[in-house]
Length: 343
Image (cartoon, rainbow, N blue to C red; front, side, top):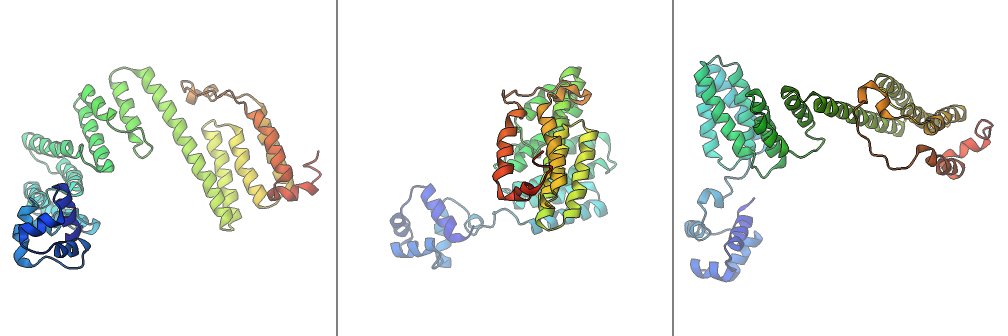
């Protein structure tokens, strides 16, 4: 954020008009207007009274407390790491604290240092009392980061605090942290932490149910990615790789007891790309067979406890519209001259 934006935001936050700022500084209103537009900058003699008026220090006015760039974060972490290795963990931690005091508003810096020093502490070879003392300081950083405005940092800190609580046997505390983390796919390990809590508290049935559901979700996610990878390779003109990925989908389905329909769809997509009528019809029949048969995911020992939502719609109800698409879509025009398709 550059100075003209800081001036404007602070002025508005304090409820001041440009006229009031101009009057306080003994200048014209158009001059303040030009500052906020970025056309000109305040005279150096006006900076101290301007900062006082806006209730900030000069460092803030100049934007020196803005968050650091990725390159700066990497450089600072490298410096702390080298200091800890060459001069000892105490020196590395002290250097990190000094840098944190220099950039007190940077959650990114604090988060990176917390992760770095936590890892270094594990191999520092300190006395137990020293290790505990440093661990508490790092945990205090995570507590602060757990309130960060940045979701990734906030949830990452809560994850680390939940992990620490589990390690200390404080399951209620771990559950509190875990409950604050959104149920989102970008934090998949939340489910593993929850399962650990269940297992350690002898809630084995709950753990098994959660793990089965997590497995099914993960496998379905992988399968969806592979479908998209088939599409991508077809778009690139690499049909051989698309066919290879389809074969991997078959292996995945076999390994994790997935519906045969999933395998048929993958090969059907490749056959359509190749305009191979015989193969298209063959895999289409496999798709129809799977859609007509009733197969519940709970039939597999891997997913016995999984709860599914029954929408009341059978897959066989999807067959008529699919047939209509096959008959009328230009994409499948090559099938119209195929004897297999009409038999």
